[in-house]
Length: 562
Image 1 (cartoon, rainbow, N blue to C red):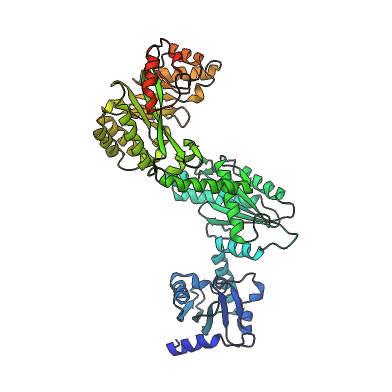
Image 2: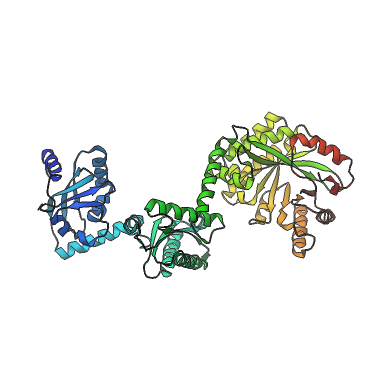
């Protein structure tokens, strides 16, 4: 092993060599670890001319091991040379490398070599190491390192040529790992790779980037037509179920397409464009392909602007609440549902369907929900004592620890009776951690709070939920109400939900009531409460008093509209 002085001497003198004439094995790499120069002996020993976009990891894949890799990172960070001994466990070949800082990156000087195999054996072993360094072990596809090398080598695309980059993400893959285990997930990933590979033609290459993320690079002149053709073939290849241990699993594929040079002629630009297109495919319903357009970028930038604004909206008082009445047939108003609203100072009113998913994704719903719950309960304290106030709990808020403590705190702070508070949850919150969720519902029930199952019939509608937890109210989604007057199937479904709920001792609320005919039909079938624009629009808290004064003098439910 060379001593420190020899190491320093080798590292300092290597830069002054005429590498073209040097007899030693010396190579230089830039900061991205791409080979920029090497001696003739090194070029000959490692067949550099046969490699495209050669990197340090192609030449010395052994340096990818944690110990040698740490030495490389130390040299890059400190500028001090390091001596590393690497060995091929299969062949017994040993090499001593001196790693040093160069003007544009790092350099490697081979000080010693020891051979125990023939040249052909060594080349075979090196080929195996190189393949392992550049290919995914599970699927056999080229890996992210190989993808980056080849895409970087292909860009910028020369004049007259075109290249398509496709980012592929599997839909509904996570539940497989969660429910059936990673073994089943790995099997699906291997089959997914085969399906992608099965639709590829000449000059189309697939890669596994990470997890359930794949990519395809395609060289064709007729773009984006050819890319869209291939992307559609990939999407269709995933429409048939995967069979694992006799179980049929449905996993779709979403694809984002970007074209070089039109959408970018550098690796970062092109990948960003493909990512944005993939996001659009996911947002549009998944299981589809989308080609990047500039409008997608504008939408994404606007969304990110809203996301940043949302973080300060609560502190700056931009949220407010409107209240929509619950009406009891043959009676009058019996309560209100609190509906969260956001007034952006520049854009105006932002729909809840836009900002609530953002707040959930960014972990903001717990704080926003706590504010909303307290405000709604304080408002309800100014109403008649028999009125209820309903507040929606988002899945993110429901699954956040400490929900029951926060509800109990609001009850104490506002002084409202627990039975006047109705918390609305959707079936989606019951899909994960079922035992914990039912425990949370039971604890809220012990507090005396009413629990309503919202949007019944539009998710999974597992009757086990109704058996395992005694909900106070079932809310029929407006999807079944909108064509209630003339659609016999909707009538049968709504009639069945009312009968089922009453049989289990639960009340029924129908939302989305917009016509007198709907209200009359629901009243005839014994629906307990009605809600919708026909009966009353959402109004601010300060308008509720006037609304109640007007409604008190009206004999018919249908006349409650404002």
